[in-house]
Amino acid sequence: MDRAVISRDAARDELSAMLRSIVAKDAAALKTLYERTSAKLYGICLSLLRDEAEAQDVVQELYVTVWNKAALFDPGKASPITWLATLARNRSIDRLRSRRGTGAAEELDSALAVPDERPSSFEVLEQAEERERLRHCLEELEEGTRSAIRAAFFEGTTYPQLAEQSGVPLPTMKSRIRRGLMRLRGCLGQ
Amino acid sequence: MSRDRDPTAAEYALRLLTGDELREADKRLEGDPEFAREVARWRGRLAPLHQEVEGVSPPAPLWERIAAGIGTALPANDNLAQLRRRVRVWRVVAGTMTAIAASLAVAFLAVPKTTVVPGPPVERAAGAPMVAMLGDEKAIKVVASWDPGPRQLVLAVAGDMPADPVHSHELWVIPAGGKPRSLGIMGSRKQMHMRLADELATLLQQGATIAVSIEPRGGSPTGKPTGPVVASGALRPA
Image (cartoon, rainbow over all chains, first blue to last red; front, side, top):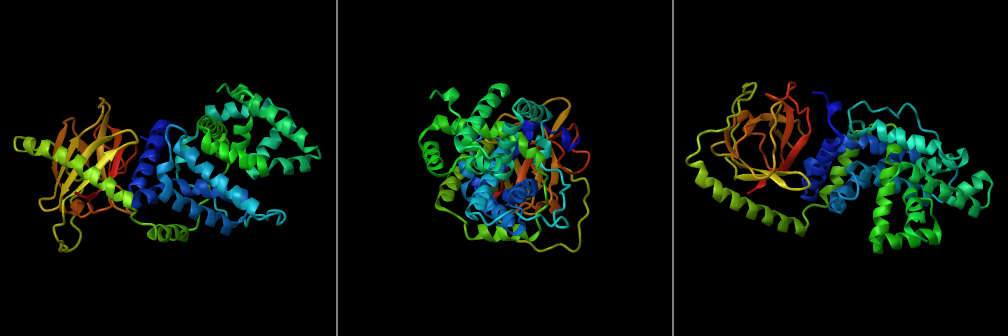
């Protein structure tokens, strides 16, 4: 049997079980969780922060938070992977914003950004169907709206920044994106 | 604004909001469960985008920093309550099993695939009995009790472990920071006893994880878990 055939539910159960062991202060479970998820979470932090030292700080804080707060994970609300990725994204964005306009992000030192080749839970979870549907529904939006939503997701861009970048008044940008998000939800049918 | 037309949860999940709007939404997240659920749904809707971000291995010392970070955060009082609860459950199970054990033949014998004993025997105090509650997020499925003296591992299947003709349940021990080692294939009985080879017995220390994975019939072809883990738990003093 190949790891790739592990179903999404099984991978989800496995990570949920790790989180539950972490609630019981099982340090080995945290180590396993780290081995399975750190490359993806570090990738998310790096792509937002574009700074290795800061991304490492965020990843460190994140796993210490998981150690202390794993009990807050609610499997009824989110998949473990989405929960962890959201934590990584939100914390990186918080840190981006606390920089308070210290200028443009610097380019990554490409020599140090070694792509990870270990199988991770994220690859196991990769669901072509879901990704394809989201891609399709984003394609349905106007180009400007789509790229604004993507910028918000991948760069942590706020409404005022998006308005400034596109040279449109803030209320215009807001209503454009709100319309886009509601259309997106209609298209995803959830 | 009706919920269906309210984009705030989506804006919040994307982190578009700033200033007062952000603070207001933060408050709403605390006090409005339906809003919190819709935020979670939006995070799920957008989650496939995370797949576009490439994974990057963090430098090795990062784990050391995390380990140091949690070292200062060790036992909180609620762990004690949790442990007491586990022991209470265990005592009930153990009581039942003691009665059964007398009449039970060895139902489950794990034969390690290799029986190489490395180096001279290491002197090792026979430690205290330990217990691991193996489960998933819904329930405890198996209770494993380990007696280091006779090197005996007793398993009681407490929850739902459906068998099928093409797969086996394989039992593993994962030492803290180590690699999984097979302890054997689980049969279909509700109670199983196994006596471990000394080499495997040394791996059953406090903090080691005991896990059950689903493997092709007869066990993992690679010697490592290849299928989903359906139950796992850490060894603790009984």
